[in-house]
Length: 326
Image (tube, rainbow, N blue to C red; front, top):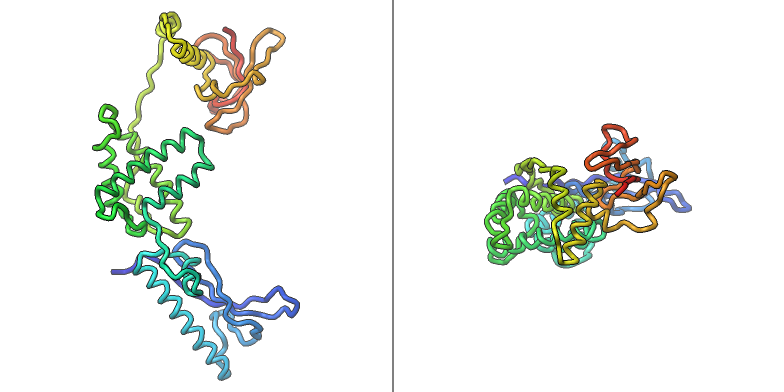
């Protein structure tokens, strides 16, 4: 079977940044989409003895022919290192091939699916909000349970990842809800697959997995029509009697969001310093949306369900300065 991985070694000559300004010969290792790595082969090499077009020394003397033979052997050794890593399901990257050839690390380094979920969670925890990273924890939970069910070892080397794993995981999520009374429907399952796709894409940049296993898996969401409250329904919510103080607080935030157009998370983050009053006694809120970073717009609330804005018609009123009267 033909390998899906790519590997190559080419030689080049480059002037050194030392006092002598002499030249050295380098081996440039390329593997899949990982960044190239270099090995220094020979220093103080005369540039006139090198053929730039062929990337090879001229063969006009015995010493140069022996050096060319040395380059051939080196290329064979690097190729053997690549083949060994490929056979043992190791990480196929130029950096890993260079390290193994140089004797750095005696064991073949591997990354498994469950190791990926832990590494990705640690990485994204520094980049995403608390609510978003919580969803990655749920996705990782599904992946862990699926691996334990499908594979005797309870895990799978990342380089063995294929379409069968992706499609099987999607079906597993639909058929095995975490809570019996709260099944995960198609859109919810697609969100889990979307997170896994992001993790797998990250592995490709690290040289851990070069195959695009999501190429044949289409992530599609079923459009759901948004339902709107009528003015009469909103008034009923405002006037319904409540005893629990927490319920009253939740209702107050919900009504406030309906009148101002703010997201609940933005209301929770609102500070007194972000409120100001103009000359006509209108109260303005200046804030930035938690989930999106856009230049501020200016919104003034006139009556329920209506806003006047100075933003362009094609710009969504996601953040900004709002005026409201209660």
